[in-house]
Image (cartoon, rainbow, N blue to C red; front, side):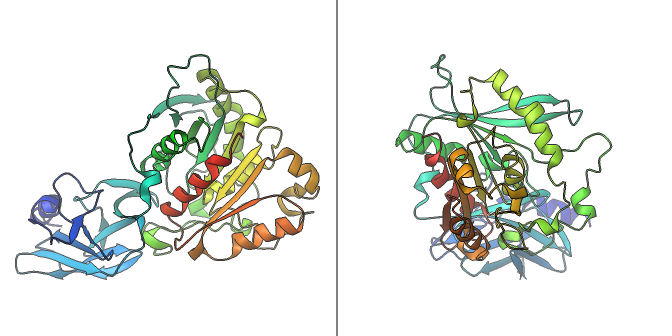
Length: 401
């Protein structure tokens, strides 16, 4: 690429003047950037300054060709988009790049641009004048992986003032291609929890967000890519450019998630309970995750019911491709429904309505087998953050009651 082209792209976010009156700048734009902007009917206009380029596209779920103006600025208005958060990229002469007019978000394995299509009932994940908790960064050394790791911890309002209070803990995981920042950056976990706690709908709790990628020394860190289990960033599977990982166990090695489970039980949970004021016992411990994190939750929690009383899968718990058999599925943990129901206070299965019937079918099969579970369906959403924000908003009030 020519240097002039690179400089033009880097400057494109601030050079386009005022957007149309009905087209409001996305809430995720960098300061003063007018584009991308969102119309009241959820159409979106993008612009990019790339005077030396031959072809420029926007990829948001699928590619849209942009038109070059006489001034070298490319633009396109795309059809109405589903409400919520979406990753997107610029494609400049075949090369995917982040749009410098927006903040970037780690997803699908790299830093993507992001856009927020306003939701009318977004009050539950919006900043409000209520007592605020905070999200804290915590580094710790893992004996299992032999590396320093980072997690984030949401501490509820009043945590530092109430020095004698101990809190239950939710371990909350991201999905494939994302990291430990996902839930508090894309997911707004702190706003959701602050608002629920202020409304007395959820109990104050600690929420631990760790990176589900964990390998031991000598293990292949590229395991999933090497076995063709994940799609590259350019894949157009899933809305917003996100490539969902199949929930069926058949796509994964039999020991999927084993190192993370070991690391969590050996390093993460003990570190959290040494560092924070944690209420003891399995009745005060929950685990949940989205997509690949939902599968990891099932892998970890179902095999350790002596440690977890609450389990949640958000777009990550379809019961596998081979059908559900209570005697054999998940190593037979559902075979004795009465024993399972006595141990697990909440088994939550959440999904977007556009994602298909797999999770609903799994829930119905569990119910038929006598296993208590909660099925939640987010209307009109697919494999995306709005589905998972809604899942958390429904799941959190069910915990530690």
